[in-house]
Image 1 (tube, rainbow, N blue to C red):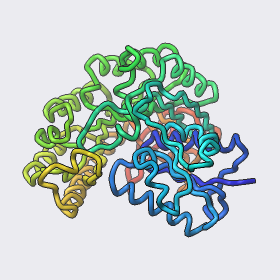
Image 2 (image 1 turned 180 degrees about the vertical axis):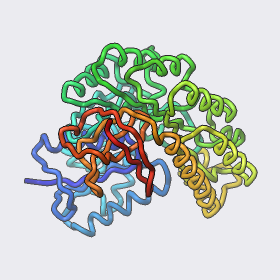
Image 3 (image 1 turned 135 degrees about the horizontal axis):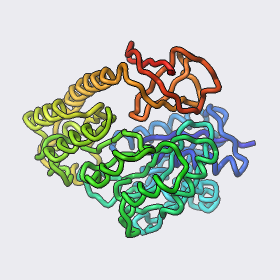
Image 4 (image 1 turned 90 degrees about the horizontal axis):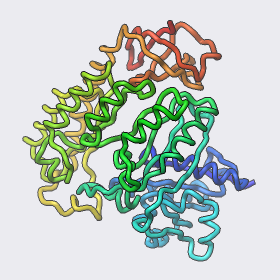
Length: 430
């Protein structure tokens, strides 16, 4: 039997789609392996968010051919969608498959036997590809509800790799959530490239979907993917604060905490607005987890601009900050902007924000010590300690110290958080 090895780069949507690819190949009698040396096919589901990720994709494909010269390499994902035919000039790439075509990878490869490429114009797509995944090995189910992006942020190439925003219809989403629930899932994560745009193309609002999930599904908990600050309206916050199913875990795609830099990035909000919003969220929910993305060293960011960002992040009520040094990406407006920041300064600034993030996370965890949380126990114990572990509604991973009862796997338990030690959170089932 032929075997495939798959490597996934980038976002949660890519991770979801890699699971779709794997399921598709298994249905066509191709077995998955964890060893490149044993594989007939090497599939790279690539990310193109930065030039660095493009370079990493090329390195991984070369390395696969080096390890197994007979392997057939298949490049898909955002790099494939953007670069297309020119990729086949590399002798270490055998097939190039587009972002939409990868969702039926087996047939896409069969259809491209002559020219080894199957990448259609993604900007012409106006309907969501209703892909279904039921991976019972995981504790939380992921459901992709949206694809594409209509924003044109100056640092980002993704709209050209993913196309226009396209929404799954509400009946499809509700049906899939209830299907997951009937298979024993307690929690679902709604993912997409820009889920805050859900409904725009089909004449609905994101709040309409949230209300339907609340009243028409049997799932016990759900989480939301990344949202832009201005997409979380007062009406949405009011609804979520009263929800019995929503997990108080927000990921705000901030990118900068300096208005000058935000304007240069072509973002549509101001720092003072989202600082107020963070304050509002913290006042409406009990210890909500508030994550964010920050890019350091974007074109034109002066030392004073960076200091403004750090100070605003310091006074914010964020729980954790995901930080990335700006990476110049050809094909974006940002590449052409003046006053590019030197790479070592971008990295140094990222390290400063990382240190601040560590401080804020420890501060957030300590606020949770002594509190009682509803925790979904994972389907598998912690690999290192062997302890049961689970995730609270507010996104804390907790190791259970007073029980090793395997019957508790994939159940929701009441847990008292007792200690934070060596970067681990511990708790006891009540």
